[in-house]
Image (cartoon, rainbow, N blue to C red; front, side, top):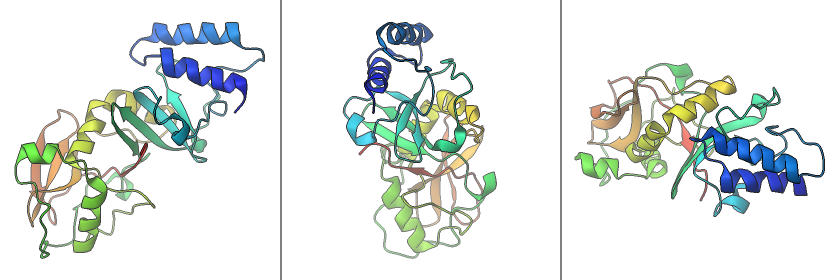
Length: 239
């Protein structure tokens, strides 16, 4: 990374607030004043810190995750000057306090509403969350998904390496950041999170799993093998 690129990233991380456009204007002006070479602000190819290098300093917000592992802050109304190349983006990341996720660019099964599993769970499983307080505190989507695979995950849910179905807690993280997340997704031509019900990997019982309504934030349960909802894969962002 060049000195100019490091300067730009430091300004964005320390002073930019995605909820306050005036802070973005400040970063632009400061960078223009301090830079030595001509660099277009907002070029997706310019800012590529590795996730491991920024894990302890990244500001809360939405990030584009590139094919090479680099990350670029998404700042609404930043004015990317037509230089944003969506083909370089593999995920949209969310960092919120100690929690983070990479969200896939599209729903599974081409966006269709589908069942979660192909049959009833007949294993001896101690991971059921049969009350809301336990379910909403579940952040173990990766482990939950492994159990769903063991009992017969719907074959239409194709997950890339490292991807899993978010738990109820993780799906609430998506819900709470949905406005900015959808702005970032739509800017690169990807599918926004729908105003609809989504499966989570948090299981209520042998027959049911928790779902979340991404329009109003309501949680419910539904039969895994007969109920139909959307699925949005996720993967680990900062660990």
